[in-house]
Image (cartoon, rainbow, N blue to C red; front, side, top):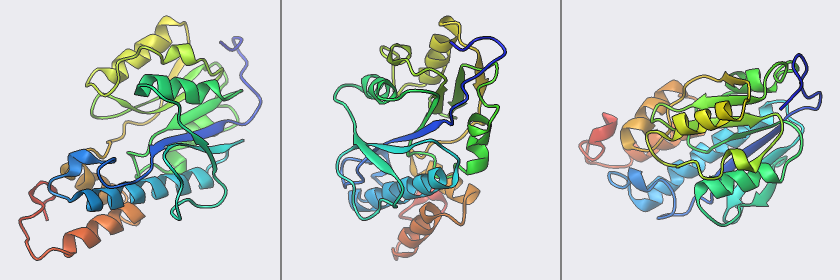
Length: 229
């Protein structure tokens, strides 16, 4: 924990944890109504939007913690490191374990994220009287977690992918005596309905354009009932 009244002086490292966008491996809850290949296209678009936000944000390091192999979708300026084995809690813990100094980790499920939404945890005074930043997700999880002093033990054993994951993770931080500040609530893209809502929030992004293209590409107007298209 940081000393009261002070905070780390070093700029923050910014991590994105993601899977390679391959059909059948990503965004499986989008299938149906989308095919596995279409779901992978949406996942790729979400990841690219997220990485461009990372590039536009101030950071000491910009790292993609990737399960898989980087492709042509990877923009320049992003360092790539492999994910560890194990459950999601272990993989998140390992990502933090490879870092020193203040670190903010986000996922690939919120392509509507902007530098402005990340700014509270990245600005010069972000870690003053603060040990952790927490970004709650509307589905009960979390989309961002920042630690002034990365400690893998703060994540290991937290139940992941449940409606109580966010509460459990935040409770873990509080139980460790950390001073926690919250980022904005965001909606993860898990279902077709989520995709429609998120695309409307960020209509100029690659994710929104991909969703619109896929929706236009079918002659069946009822194919995407969950999206209103």
